[in-house]
Length: 141
Image (cartoon, rainbow, N blue to C red; front, side):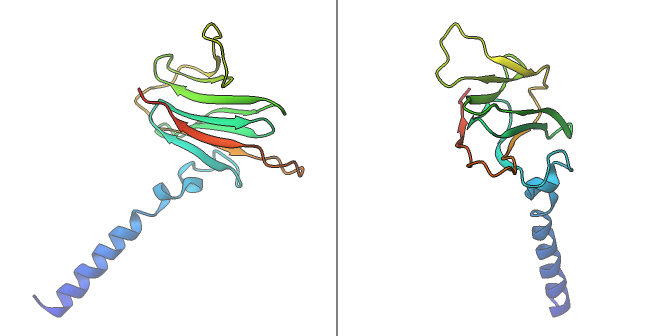
């Protein structure tokens, strides 16, 4: 194999590998401006993903497959919620972590396509409040 061909193949492989870290690898680019700068990716994946957060944050849910913002809202101070992409309800739902069995979750967005990929984002307001507690959790099917 000629040296020129080896160099060309090496450059092609490196260029292809760099492409893997392009827009799909950068969450702020992946959302195509649907969430503001400064929002943190909390969870992403197929329905079944969930995210726990305390109040005082703005929450964004993006349908990554359709490239659309399907929910945006402020979580009230003092609240603690779990936001889930629920494949059975085909909805984005919110509920308290200590919900009773009879308590129905609050539907934030419906219907969703349960074959799509979603992302959940949080953003702390700039007014100097302490950062709320957030934790991503995965709920097995």
